[in-house]
Amino acid sequence: MSSPHPAQPDSKLSLRRGLLSVLTLVALTGLMFYIFKDHLSEISAALHSLTIGQTALLLLLGLTYPLMEGIINQRVLSSRVPNYPFLRGLDLSFLGAFGNVVTFGAGTMPMQGYDISLNGLDVGPGIGLMTLEYVFHKGAVLLYAAVLLLFYGRWLLDADSAGLMRYLLPACLVVAVIILALVLVCTSRTIQKLAYRLLGLLPRTDKWQARRQSWTAQLDGLCTESRRLLQNRFLCLQVFALQVCKLALMYTIPWFSIRFMGLAPLTFGQVQTLAALMMLLSNALPNLGGMGSIETAFYLIFTGFLGESAAMSALVVYRAATYYLPFVVSCVGFFFIQRRWTRARPKKSG
Image (cartoon, rainbow, N blue to C red; front, side, top):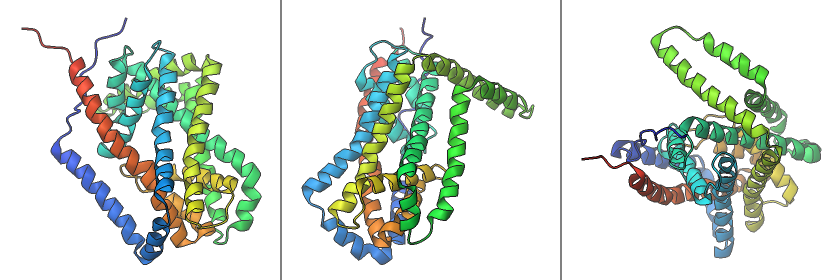
């Protein structure tokens, strides 16, 4: 039997918080273009070479990411809530994109947990399953990059005119180790027991003990749901395949951008490899509201193969398709989600 729904998160975000988020987004965007100021004419010329049809295709490809996440959400949550609706899975994807920007990521899990609870699953298991999806995503990022490196690693080192790869590949290896550790926390009982022991070593102050209780509860839900989900091997393979497909579609955006704007004669597989390394490297870099890490990693990875102005041109298109457009769509989605939350809120008696 499901427990009563938790209190609705503060979905009516304060004007100050919303304004701060928008101003931060504008400031970071302005900073990006300030960094690009010496190449604005080349970037503008490259962008103007895109036709309306080509631009529409690139933007539509950007929307495949939240769409694929919606499918993945629906498949995973259906394992605990039969016939979990696809539209609710898509709502979770919108909440992820919206919360990542507006709450700087801090409010994403609470909002998703509350929305899941409205469909019959307690917050603890719901957040546990969403965390597992995140781990599947990280695992797919790692494995896909590793497979592509097997085929294109030699080309990568030979064609790197700037010689950055000799420094970036070790950094990617460090990220790979971190991702592997995250996967083991969710799949290995030995690592899970070690995590519990480490939590027990936290300081005995009230503040740290409150954190320990919260983290222990999250770890409990994660361990329980991971054991349950991993027993369904077909579902795990299905989710992992969907994660790889999601990444592959997103990695086609730089390839189409480069091809449409005539920036470099790189093959489809070569651009997929560069994009996969970019995504892997971005996991080691700090970000604010989803910005900073991707831009830095994209510039570092692609500049040696495209040159500065071409790499920046491809980056502008990539971020417009994968960040700005999904965020705008998520704002519209959040408006309707908020209305559904209001209708679902229990009415006060007499």
